[in-house]
Amino acid sequence: MAALDVVRVFCGPDGRHGNELGVVRDGARMRAREDRQALAGKLGFSETVFVDDPERGVIDIYTPTLRLPFAGHPCVGTAWLLDLPELVTPAGVVEARQDGEFSWITARAEWAPPRTLRQHGSAAEVDALDVPPPGEWIYAWAWEEEAAGRVRARAFPGRDDGIDEDEATGAAALLLTHELSRALNITQGRGSQILTAPGPGGLIEVGGRVKFSPSGEQSSLSGD
Image 1 (cartoon, rainbow, N blue to C red):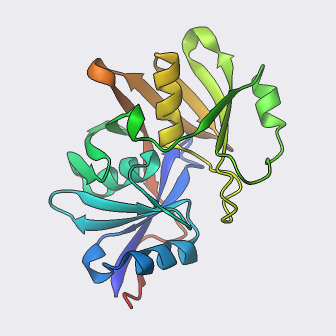
Image 2 (cartoon, one colour; image 1 turned 60 degrees about the vertical axis):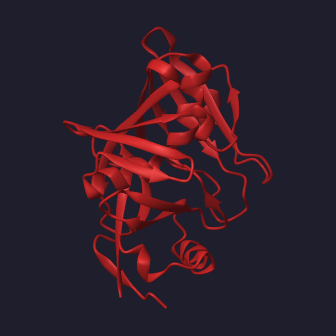
């Protein structure tokens, strides 16, 4: 049996919300990509991480239907869970750090999968959006307070895989920060919080709170 941890990434200031993430600590028990993909689909989280080398931080990331070279909330959550200074993803090496209640990663916008960043006129417009039809990964956002860098956002993956709306998405926040070239304080979904800050050389920090999820802390799963 392989251990499965479930954490919530980018929780709000009150500790609620955040995007659930499944982390299989011993990825060696399930090496075949087709098996990993099948498990990710069965679990149904927006992403599931398989840790291939816990000392070096080598990880493999899956949505319910595809493998990703990089994703934000899986990296933030896994770095927090394993208390690692860096993670090795197919896209590149992701630096990580802990700062009080926040867990941070440093990555590049070009590592993020393509997203359509769609600006709206107000936070109320974003709140009123219906889930669009599948086919396009849309990050809908609006300024709540532009001078303070406060953003309201919602994310619609459009993959038709059971995830109609993503509660909190680090990669999309990374892309928006790159486009706007400024630090952001993003409220996404039902109340998740994502903080970002552009750095030197095209690097961008993405951070938030991580907590264990009551739905699946330290559960077990079959490695067959």
